[in-house]
Image (tube, rainbow, N blue to C red; front, side):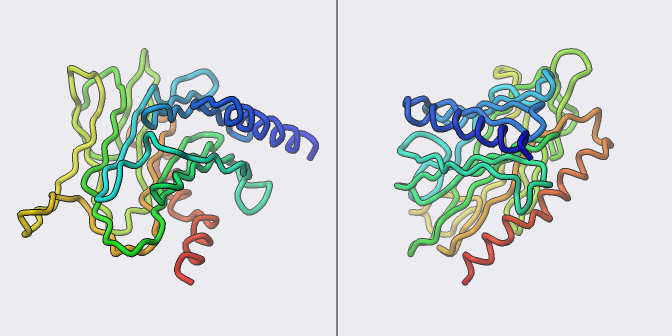
Length: 251
């Protein structure tokens, strides 16, 4: 119990120092201390992480364009100083929550012992929220033969990670294409063509109610058949803490 409390205090102190000193790179570790991540929110949302010294993701950048604003990057934010392991100390993750108060959304970043996951939460508002595009760039060493998720992200040697998604709930499935000039996977959504010529194309329409967007996550994997991929997808899909928040949204 003392060890768990010590880890909690260490994580809390690191985040508080980063916030007070005006730093825009935040560190997050898994409960066992083997997964270490850095989240850079300086001008965009950029994630780097490793497990036991092996790369899990190297500088993946994320942003989302909606009718009202550009999410995941820039603008005022507050770091919610809540580090916990779900509903009980037995659950295996620590979490950062970034609240972008002027844009009405939040980003969760979660460090499991074997995976790093993130997702966005859109707040309720009186307008229809069209998501025009969602962009992610994931540096990778090798060009793939397949660009559907889950996708293997290759590094030096035999080391590789899998990029997965969960909890789509009708949201378009993520597709990636490999950009040989950038040496990175880049997201590719099939956009919906709107009949109104004065409105932009969009990938998803939300009715103004609060909701979560899908989980995106990285885990070390040897190949597409690695059971850790399916285990991570199931873990995110059955997460109880998010379901409790979602029930409160609907009240």
